[in-house]
Image (cartoon, rainbow, N blue to C red):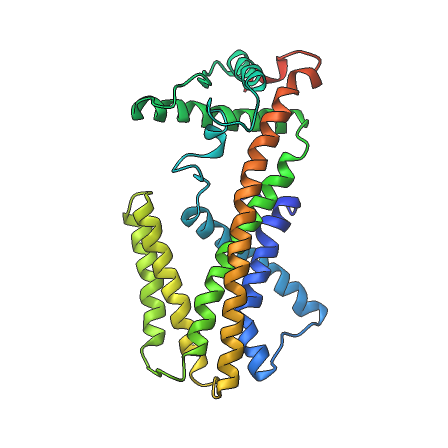
Length: 292
């Protein structure tokens, strides 16, 4: 893997990874006042660890929270529907004509709303292919403007949604650890992780599979908080602090998910708008695309 530390790495991996590590450490700081070392060498190791933690978080969030935000359809396809008012008809026609001219793909902006499922699926495949070709063309020609920023922001907000979701159940596990003590919490953590891995390797990429994996991982997060908190949480004040942290994380998760949906749509809009001006930016020629 060729890793370059750029805008996307910071917003998509490093910041969410740092947040997840902070979430996991916060109860130790609040209850035991045990905070991480801020020396440069330790901080450097922490940054690297946060980056790779963010990579794992990105992979999990990408699988459990895919961008099919329009009833199982991606914004890259749904925004080209006749009924969608994000773009005017004239803009859609110009975009469809340019995609057909450069890539030979028909995005069927005149597809009727009551089209058969097999037709709609085929059109969606064509539109999704066209979107990634548009994005690739913009990157190759170095004419992409705000699309990369929106891509990094929506990836960050999606990972933050997953991190705060973990935080909610993790803090609840801490909060109730001394009420229902059990030596089996550690085993539940392992079972949750193993269950998620088995489901991922053997299941299909469906909503049911994603829900099972999310449930296994959230269950493992709750059990890990329960396991760690049994020897630390000792008073009702500790429990109230952790419950407050869980409530805050819930609202942060909801706001992050709303931001993720917004930036995911803005990313698609930016790619299509930049691509409409692509031919003009390149002097009206298509030579840059003929070798793709």
